[in-house]
Length: 639
Image (cartoon, rainbow, N blue to C red):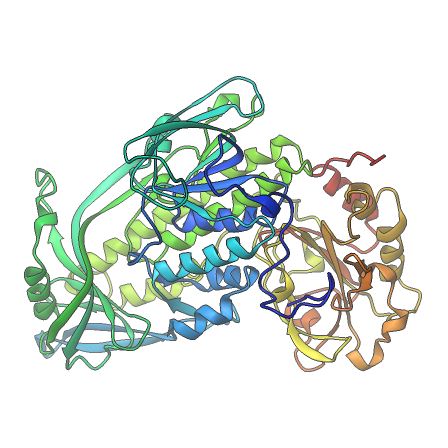
């Protein structure tokens, strides 16, 4: 964490200095704004948190609830999401309070006595070391609390406007604020004194994000529909405190019985609470939702049948629900028809459950929703601050809709296998084999964006095979040279809207003639350099582009006073040096070997949301300039 560069900080350094809109943020919901977010769930809150780092952008987030979520339904946090939490500065804090999944156990009917279940297999949760971060279980409400804290403490000082319900919207052809949104006062909340419950008002925005759930009114207002099918299979889910003799009560378990159905068992944070998804069986096509009337007593009785010979005696129910599995996705995540893409700017977007729904058993809903919100938010920030053209916004639906389709296909197979009786499977180990074969998907690491204005081709992928273009930047240990401390290279990539340019040096060290040194000089001084061409006049040199270097030598062989100036930028009002952009390979766990980086060096370009956008040779300055010229706009000179 960096602070003091704006002057001495004696309080909480997580509270950044207010700027722009955050200096005098209206307490009441204004009539006009740049971005209106509808829904303070995971997709909406991460979008608000990211946009709070763009203090020149007026962002408001409304929700029909009177205040913060008290009990969240989602609880699974994949490792990719914890990497995201690191970018927002609260990974370690939430890890401390979460339940950490390290193993999964598979229980099946005892071949000698099928009425009883026995443990059949035990698998590691991350046998391949996909991430340095763990797989967690933590209440969705706490996740939202952390994002709310981040947004509140960021320069834009964004906070939810509670008690406003979305009614409808219309989009005009022109005007500075082309989206007219009708809101209704749903409940008295302290953000807008003097408005009565049921009172309606119209606000105008440049862009609207509908993150308002599976019954999204924003989705309906732009004519999008969730398309897909229903599995006609029901599950009862309960968060409970209970007494039980089941030996793996504090381990994640997939439990299949001979004739009583299945349970997906998830321990919860805090040691005592746990969640069970209890198989309620097939639902008739003409059920018309009657299965949702299944009582808690019936769910518990079913759970005990599945767990036999073990029992569970529920003492307290914190939350429960009955749901039917459905798999649906919209064909597009914005308000532009397929045949109109490129002819007009998207003005209304949808994210999260508003555009994709599936079962909860793969633990994907909240995680994928947050990646939706982050993907869109930094792009909105770029466009609204004038960094990038509006065509950048077309990439949101193009990137995220394909991810949702892949999720639906994965979840169909996983939920179908969970509902199967063991004797109906092709192989007794089919469930655990599928889990291990596809483990990268539920961990969040299968996402790979296709080539676009944001994702280059793979002509030079061989220079850094461990950083696949289009996939998330996988961090690795290095040594920070200035203070000789071990660091994870990717952990300094915060959600501040900046692009990262990692320069992996060739064999020469700092101060020696090399292609890395030539590149550093070009980045600092050439008119074609993205840093020179696009950084606004008067801004810090690293305001939009965070350029780092990793040397192949041990840190003791890198002298800081010989490091090129672009890696030691002057920052803040006092123009003091930032020393934390210079790294050396760990001699024991060398990042060049671990990530397949060529000893001839390479440039790895990473987007604000952690995804690798380009890999280039050190001498490919023209290609680097052309890549960023396709994304950024030249900034007007100040007078």
